[in-house]
Each structure stands twice: as C-alpha cells, then as structure tokens.
Length: 364
Image 1 (tube, one colour):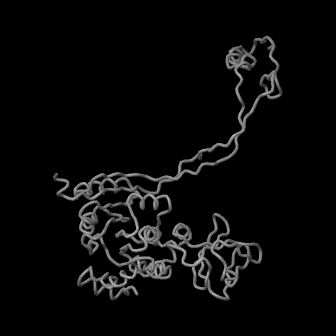
Image 2: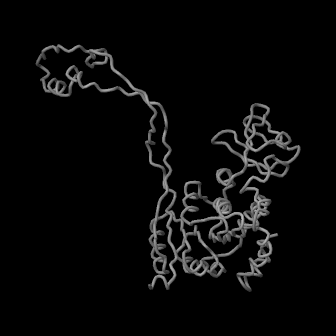
C-alpha cells in the first residue's frame, strides 16, 4: 500500500506532507486491538507457525538464521536439512529435528532480527537501542521521526515501542535502500506503523510540522538537521537523540541544540560488559598462623646476603614448592562470584539527548 519511488518523487516536489497523506485513512484502522492483526514482528499473532511466516532458526548463540517458511522447501545447516514442512503447525520456540540433529524455531522479535538481518549499513544493537527507547520516552501512541533508516534495525524496535497506534516516520537519502527496507516492513507486517520516505532531511527537512513527540538522528551531520527537527517536533516537552561515533560530531551537535533552545542536554556512551559468573574457592586467612609464614622480611634478609657468604640454615620447614609448610590444614570457602572481563568493550558511539523547551516557558 505504500507509494512507489516515482510517485513519492512527484509528491515530494509539490508538497512534502503529501507523501504521508495517503496514510491517514490507513492510520484510522490502526487504533485499538484490531491493529494487532498486522503486527507480526511486534507481537505474536498466532502461537503456531504457518506458511509464509518469518522464523529465526537457532543453531547456537553464534549461528541464527532468518527464513520464511515455504511448503516443500529445505534449509541446510551444520545439523543437516531442516524441512519447512516440519515447522508448519509447530509452536514458536519448538525444537524441530534435522537430518543430523535439531534446532529451535523462534519468533522473530526485534532483538533477534537485529542480530540476523542483512547488513546494508552499520546498525545499532540492543544496548544502544534500549537506551534510545528509554530516553526518548516512547510509549504506545507516540509519533517518532527517524533520519537514517539504514538497515532498519532501530526501526523495528521503535515500532514495537509505539504500537499499536503510534507512527514512525523514517527517512533515508539512499533510494535503493529505501525500497529494500520498505519491502521488509511490509513482509514483517509493520507497514501500518512505519512510513518510509526517500528524502535528504539535511537539505529538505522532514516535511512535518509540530507533530512528532521524538526525533532520532543517525547522520554524519546531525547539527544541520536540528533546525528542521525543531519544526517537526511538538512545541514543548519533545525529545531528541543523536548518534555520533566521533566526539567532534557531538560537540557541534551540542552547540546546535543549545542554539535551538534545547535543554537538559546529556551525552552518554553505552558499553556492555559481560561478567563471567563462576564458583570460586578461597583460603580463609588464619592470623594465628602468620608467625609460621615465610615472611617477606625473611626473604629480604636472605636476598641481602652476599654470594660468597654461607647463610645459616633456616629452621623453618620448607615444602616442595619452596614455601614453608603450614602446621595446620588450611580452611577454604567456596562461593559464587562475578568476574569482570579483562578487556574493555570497544567504542560504538555517543548518544546525545535533549528536550525541546517552549520559548514562553524558557522566558519565564
């Protein structure tokens, strides 16, 4: 139902808002529970897998594959052939046998789609996506503008956050990417919520006037788009977020935000550290036995002896490891602990948030 590229061009040349005019009637039936029928990648419509459904084939934590179920087709994996017919009628999350083992067939949540989608651009992952949805204060019914659709990773998560009666207007300057991601949104059943347009917002703006609750910018030059974002956002209480990999981009964006009456400007970097949880056995220190220990002072005295001197033999008992033997058995205790990673996770980008303050409120 979305417009083709040539028609979008004609509408854009006359009036940017006309790109989305054909969506108004469609948006009416999105209200309420009836809209859930169309949200295949946002909420489970049917517990059972049917022909034409998108599923995530889970082999292990590093090998997940999205496939569309088609009758009489076969998916090859390291566990052998997975027959699509064996998946039809099974519940999402079921174990399905292959010729050399078995796999899980999972419901395609936005998180799973993020780690399995075909990369056409660099994408955002769950750590940044969750923080973006939180800081933009998204909720069902929110209207969001996204500049830089890319591969659509963030778009799926935003659509779930604002469903069932919200709208996501997403823009990308690359015409072919727009067509591909538009087909994916339709195949995933979220085209009633996500509206895609081929548009360079850096020079043309969003074509929207005071309708958005939030704006997200994933562009090389977000500072050029911030004045257009002011026009698209509601006059007060709206939120904006920019994603930039370089701190120099952050500096220029913050200057533009301050110049355009944004307040509460905060920049964060979200780094994910995975701790290793394991059992650890430790020795309980008994201070009464310290006098029997081979102390550092004793070792220092021995090191000070000249090579030609013959040191007096020690009266301490030395075990096979060169340490004094303990007179008593050591007491140990075992407990669970979380061990931090030895290396710091790599940098992804900086997220800068701000709130648009109405000029009247700001003057007061």
